[in-house]
Amino acid sequence: MLPLTIALLFCVWRLYPRNAKLEQTQLRNKPRPDIAVKFERIRGLKIRSDGETIWELSASVIKVNRQRTMTEVDGLKEAIYYTSGKPLLRVTAEHATWNMVTNDIEVRGNVTVRTEMGLQMRMERVVWRDRERILEIPCRVVGDSERLRFVTMRVLYMPMQHHLHLCDGVYANTNDAQFYCRQLDVNMKSGEYVAHPPVRLAVHIVQPFERFELKPMDVEALTHLIGIGKNQPTKTAVKDSKDREKKERKMLFESPTQPLKRVGRKIFGADVTVREEGEDYVIQVKRFTYDEEKEYLVADGLVRYEDPDIVLIAPRAELFRQERRVLLQGKVHLESRVKEDTQCSTPSKSTEEVKTQTSEQNEDKLPLRERIRRKPTVIECERVEYFYRERRAVATGNLRFKHGQYAGSADVVTYWHREDKLLAEGKVIVNDTEEGHIFECTKVTILLANGGRKEDEIIVAPGAKALLSVREEEETKEKEPAKEQRKEQKQQESEQPTEQKQL
Image (cartoon, rainbow, N blue to C red; front, side, top):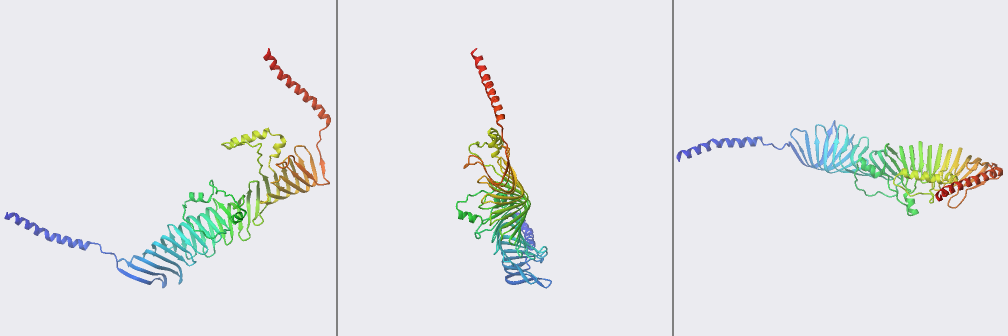
């Protein structure tokens, strides 16, 4: 028993100093907090460079590491960024990290940024890149100022140039416009806006700012939201005239491929579709300028105006919104849409090919007069004034027209689509393509048959010259016996099979 106790005591004696040394070494190797300096309740801490104040901090706690490379800030009450002694940015947040090597600053937690121009932005994270002098916000941002309110998913702000870039899907409101676009570039000093496609811009907004929520803002969702491409915006019926006047306070500009630029109260763009809420027209333009104060649009390149009744194509056009008037110049082509006849119309099929086949078959069955009447009215000229509320067009300059079975030329033509009425004035020549008559006069009114008129009406001014195509009686007399002979032959042919059956 004694040797066993001695052995145990020897083992304890051998192990004890080693454990003590191990504990001492572990205490020495334990990482100490990497804090060289700690400040609390800091107010007005200034960071200088070349004798100028760059940042001024007020925070609850500031910690500087031993290597003097990183500074942690907790409870950032206010951080002011200066340039040439002028404050450009004011930032408040819960936490901030300052990289003392690159002078980049990352701010996190309930961040609020206020700019010199009065813009306030709220987000969860923001990064200041000192070398580029850019404030980058890589998360959802809600901005608000006197002139601009927006929601977006990413922001780049350059305080030296007062340039604001809203990226990755934007919904923005100004005092008199709305933007739905992929990217919006704003010059906060000059008030210039550039919206990148796909873009939808609505101007002349009567209603005040409305509260809004963030929506999915990838390109596909944004395209669906603003109704560009296959997904067109739904048409809402206007119930009351007062509601219609309110709706008309919006002009819509949409472009899937080209940016829109707004400077002050003017809008510039290319490859744009123009609509007016409360009206049923669509204008497609190659290049345009719109003056919001005058409510005046001028477009060139190629212009296509379209409404449910009329199609107009010209190299240049002007829209006078207050007068509800469109002026087209150059080589102008006007074509009316054919009014559907309920008696001749066929039920709609599943495919467009079946529709075209049935319509062609039905037109072939119609007499010549009806087929000509169903053709659209066409006017070729150099200048057209079109009043889209009245569906009235006034054409002048090297003018030719086709109206039903009547074709001709004149100095001035006034066309009313709803009444199927055409008034030609000046040096007028009219050719009745069906009957072969030709008129020369100073004024003629052509009224096509419609729901209120069974036959076409032509009113010619006094002093007209006419070349009439008349069939002679001898020709008709010669044709009558020939018709009787054909009838007898048909009767004989029909009687032959019956006789064979009896046999």
